[in-house]
Structures are given as C-alpha cells and as structure tokens.
Amino acid sequence: MKQEGLSFDSADIEISHTVHQFSFGNRPTLRRFHQLSHLHPTGLGNDWNDRLKGQTFQALAESSHEHYMQLILTTVEPLYGDGYDAYDYTVHSHNFVRDDSGVPSAKFTYQTTAMQIVVKELGKRWYHFLTTTCAIIGGVFTVCGILDGLHFSAMKVIKKVELGKQG
Image (tube, rainbow, N blue to C red; front, top):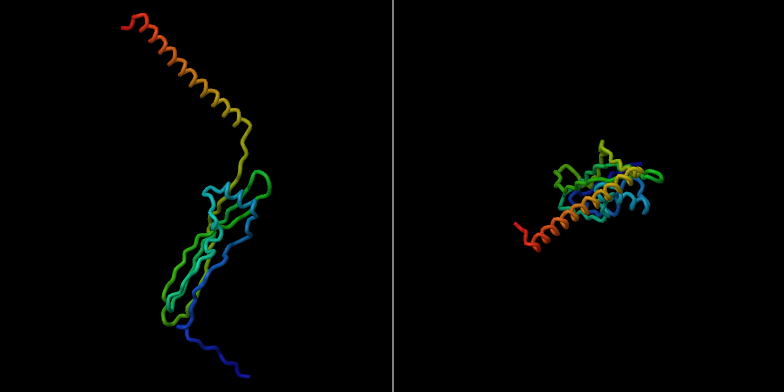
C-alpha cells in the first residue's frame, strides 16, 4: 500500500493566535494569592503568573512568532501554615519574517533562572514591643520638655515686660 505525503503552500499558512492561558505550576488558592500579594516585595498584578493571558498576536504575511519566557520561582514561607511555591515569568514576544525555506510557526520557549525569590514572614520578638513603647514614651517626654521650656521662657519674658525690666 502506497502512502502519499501531504503537500501545502506555506504562503497560505496564517499563524495569528490568541493565548487564553499560559502559566507554570499550580495556581495558588485565593487565600494564598492574598497572602503572597501581601508578602511579595514588589506586589502583584492580576497577570503576575500569566503574562500572556488574553493577548492576541496577529501574523504578518509569511511571518513567524516567537515567545521567549524566563521562569522565576517564588517560595513563600508564611509564619503560620505550610509554605508553597509559585512561578512568575517574564516574556518577550517577537514577530519576524521568515526566509523562503521556512514554514511559518508560533514558537514558545522557556528557561528557568538560577535565581529564586524566597519570601519568609518573620514574627516580632517580645522585646520589639518593649523598645517601641519606650521610644514612644521617650519621644512624648522630650516634646513635653521642649514645650514646657518654651512656655517657661515666654512667661519669663512676659513678666519682665510687665514689670518694665526688659533690657
């Protein structure tokens, strides 16, 4: 039985595409997302782990698309509860005209970075409350002393003016 190959004209291939979802790892639960957004040093946007979501890429005549992503692992270690990993990525998309020998394509490549973000929540020590309270009391005492000194000096000047001994 003879098997025939498929033939097509690569000039007729149109590779426009829309990315509906593109993420890595498990999506965090709503509670973990709020916890991560609270603890994450740069804050989080709605697209923090799905940068390509909802984007449409229009193909030019005889062109190809390439999407290059770099993954960054974020490990969250909350004070209470279990830690978890979340992935973020940066993406660079390019549209380029292919040469005559190539076929139009949409290419997705990714690379993990050697860096990792570790977000660790630390509790406050008991002495932190004590030193903060002492600092507040010391500040109030200093301000009251300054105000009392100003009031005393002003009263002394007023008394001299009343007695006519200014000079």
